[in-house]
Length: 512
Image (cartoon, rainbow, N blue to C red; front, side, top):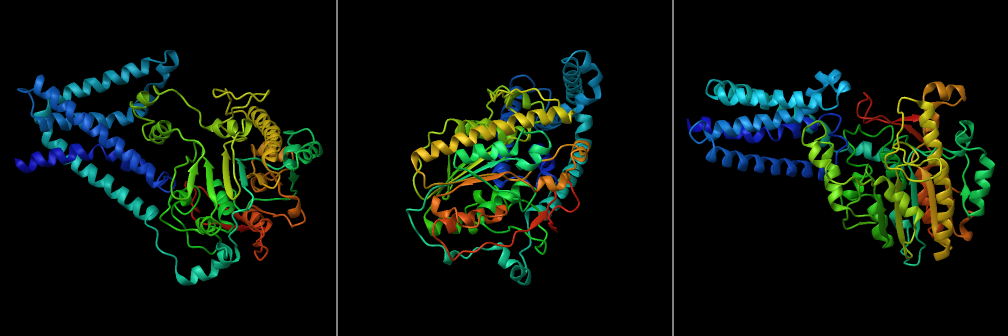
């Protein structure tokens, strides 16, 4: 009996962590940061404590003579677990939702209450069956999680031969970099999914490429033709930007997760990398303005430009609770759109920066979610028909042209503080629309993903230095401009990459 009591309590507790295990599947596990896993686990521990205390209180006050605590706590734990599938249960009654948006909610709540009542009434008959069934179920779920965790989070070390083969492309000789506290500030303004002017003109996103280039030139910005990204995804593209090297190439060992790439590699201060070595060698301070996709977190190397602690916490766990009834509690928190943080920073630029600083401003635009109207007003609740490619193009065009105006004005504000600073404005990758639109305009959708916008401003003494042809050499260009003449560019290579749901995830293939 004692063993059965302990087993019942153990199962009740483990039921609070099975949703965590199922959430960390083969799609989410490679992408999620370790800090986000800790936050989700802490939120479940809090829910466990609340459930335990409420069960203790209700049982003592109302049900002391009707049910044992072990049974009552087990039933409550099962009920809480099933609430994680509240939204899934509603799908069975979606036809009712179309008639009245509350009917399906009410019906599902009634079903939950009915089964909860039946469980309490039949707990003595069901208890042993529930223990056996849940024991097997939990073991299976934890086994699957352990398998995924091993595959995607416990990465085997690279072999020595593999390391030698990729050394030239994946490293930067720190000894060639000098230490100078008088070096100008560097601004990396990354516009997510900003295609180049050539494709933008072809698609009618802009009226005239020449007029845009002239406008940029009037604001001391040089536009680079035929520029390309080395990777067609953000997490590798920005990693190559900050490290000045290739984070992964065709001969690299297959990776299982994003831990070595952006933003994970700069958030993990315990694991050294090229970027950290550059910051230490040059004594540069690094400031980062994060986004909903990648929040900034202060550490020994990072200083956050924006800081909304409560919202960061809530946003991290909202995705975990998205299908559960608990999402309604998080939705009560006032909505705050951090996507516009970076836009507001660029529009209302008042930062008093100093020499020898690096700024990374990651803007989740012009690609979705869209929040610019046709007058460049920021609309956090902009209604977009996601099924209409032409509608998406209109909103992309609005964002594209608004950003061109914003960055043109920004450089003037930076020049007012100092004309010697370096500003690099780039798309982390290009963009494409539906195959029908791309074919009509004779544009290869895959090639357009490798063709981002790139414009820059450097001190006059650096304008004769050969400008980079791809993202991996931008940081090297900045360091050469700052006086590190012994540094050289890497070979410019394109690598096709894949997402977690694709069979080739973890490999990259050289593209001609």
